Image (cartoon, rainbow, N blue to C red; front, side, top):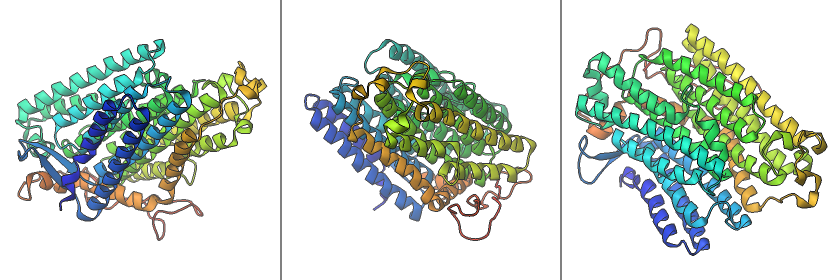
Length: 553
């Protein structure tokens, strides 16, 4: 049996779950059981897909009986299946966390009858975006997840949430309209929207037309990925939502934009045409985002700015046009989804235990709740890139790829990446020192709950459990960094080569346009090497230290 034929179930199962939970709106317990059960089943299916493409390679499935390039096609390769698995892991963890919060609060914050169906629709939209093989279905995936996110962001109906929701909706609609216009122009110029077919036909367009389409897609995806200067909306929108919603938004929504950028840059517009602007944007995203984080006194807003900042690392890896750079970017995406979601869930626990997420009102949390301090410390050090965590491994891979590329701009990005990592550590240290380490009475505006121990909210196990599990999953990315880097390297090779993707969709007779490697780069097939680590740290590869080899598209 072709395992790819089961890929549509990754979208269908959450949609069925949404329908069932909506029908069970008068039975909250049944709603919770259905949503958690079907999302767990979806995760198992996606793990099977990942194991299959690891051994058999890229596969595709056509829907409705229409063959490409006329019909809808879904493509499963190592990159898309990895994104599916990681996104479902964090979606399941956040769902269990939200369920525990709802049970503890009597569903005052987010009515179960609304939350569960909407959340599953969001998951379906994310899965559809990762699997789709044509641009219009990618647009549909974006619209499904964005429509669900509008509802989730405004749950509770408070003034700040409605105001933030309006900004979020306006920005999302603008990016979606721009994306739809770009799709229409691409169809008018080529007569197709199937990405494998576009990979062939776009090469024959006039360079000016091709570059215009390229820029339009980059801007549309840049808004969704929160790339500077298109990231202004994110820090004001995400922190106002309920903690589980903020966590899943931070983990997934921007990464779908990053995924779309990676997929279109490598498949539709290979080469180094816009690498220089992308590197400049990556540098500005890293630095402006982290400078904004340092200026914050609220933990949620601080993490929102670090979210923007670390998108710059992913764009940097994409802009290098090398196997090593793209492999490090793929690894970093998986790492960042997990760690950023963990930190937002921990922030929800901080807000519950300490009465606020403002550092001005917090203190003494390390003594008050050592477990909470540990749950914050581990992913915080991971985000800052402290050895031997996966954040360090991903950044090291990106820096080594930049040094191997050797251009002045790439070296500038390497320096910018190091500075951003140090500033991230500074921002995280401020949170630790003020919220966890200092005495409660030293806070500028101490929260009342910290003075009255009896009034402090205890943390439900159903919220602490999934948070701890996600923190452990983040640590597991370090322990299994070797296989993950191998998977990331294989994904990068497949995406830059394009042959397997195009032949999977259009058949083995399809002619793949050749791409000249940028001057000074190794051939596109050059295998990436996992980053060399300091002595004593876990090493993903065996053997003597070897510099990462660059590779051109």
